[in-house]
Length: 145
Image (cartoon, rainbow, N blue to C red; front, side, top):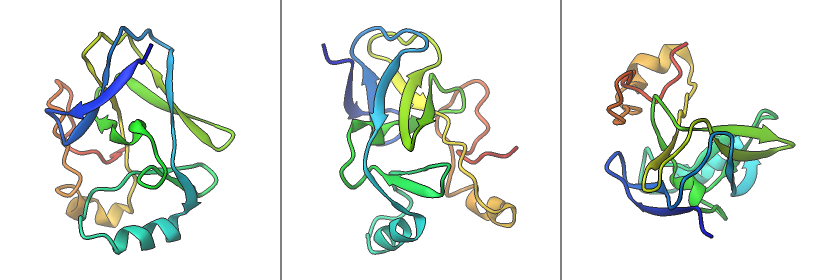
């Protein structure tokens, strides 16, 4: 039985939604796409007309998974400050796991915790505004720690 579907989100664009109950700790799917260098990914996205919308997931070895090229529905996961899922990297692959029980119809979220150079944070804050509207929303998708 299919566990998730992609459809319009009230938070931003498309989102991923549970079709059935998902339990805490359940592995939902793998974040798939072309594994490449950040330089190649940046070059690819610089050519695109739409700005501020990428499907890049950084790996610990310095490479990136580009979900916009060869990816699956996981690329539509939206950000929330109080996420119900988390990413787990294992052997150069990224999996999305539930960190709490998720009800049917509920949207799946991860905390993007984007990192940029500190000197760019103030300027970039508006570019990476969060719209999750959770009680503890920090107002940005950036990792401010």
